[in-house]
Image (cartoon, rainbow, N blue to C red; front, side, top):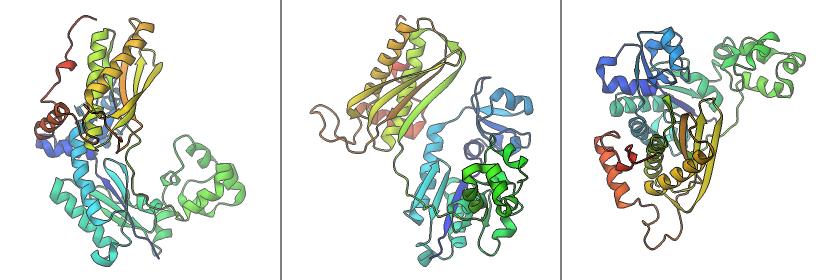
Length: 389
């Protein structure tokens, strides 16, 4: 049976959410990311992309390319909430949803066609539902496999729909730059082009010697991709393997009490995301990057696994303090807190601990206030800079 695969990609997701929530930003060059020189671009709207600004670019470089760009800090809790609304739409269409990020997913709608019509009709319905529920736009690629669906979603952006099938496969694929294929990145592209392969059609027609020169032992696999062959299934996403939060500071931090307060805030953010998914964490990792970019990690098991902010904050600060004793007065440019060893069922809880899958009363109250009024309204007292260093 021919498969019907969709790749749904929200258009400039973070930036579009910011434009939606602040109409004064619409149509202006907009960067979502760190607002200081050391930050990076998390998202760029289409107005600023015309200047060559792209995700992961340093903010300094982005502002050199477009000095009039407006920079806003990311609001991850808002994006996560909108993403949950979008994925709820996906799951109402099909249970076979493979999430790639907050704003991107593969959907296998083969079985849904019997009840909901063609893949094109389903894609149009998804886009309409997303617009109605979130006031945002999405682009959808339709194809018999994941490789082609991913390529198709990028061919009619923004707010578009594109189908690749047996009737137009060669006409669509052959003229495309070869770097559109999965597996060809900035490092490998110069060598591929040097072998004379510049388009997907060039790759599809390449002889064995040229394939070996360009890709070595992976040559035949890459030629299959150029022919549109991909039998990978859409795999319904399991829970995240880890949850983390990190921050690059505009100025290096040296004061232990400032570092503790920043790390506690990061642990709180990661804990909130953990509880949103009704998970517990069995391991906590602290990430520390010095001024000279040397990066350290410190890790500790959590037994029993927990979802409590207080537990994570205590362990994170203990790990940081252990590091500080060996690195007194070190200049720190980045801190991170990661939670891993995630599980839904923590087994038998301690008599005085919250029931498995349930946050503490304090965490539940904080989470509820933040969901209703925003993540910045409420700050835990433990996040404030106080006490001696």
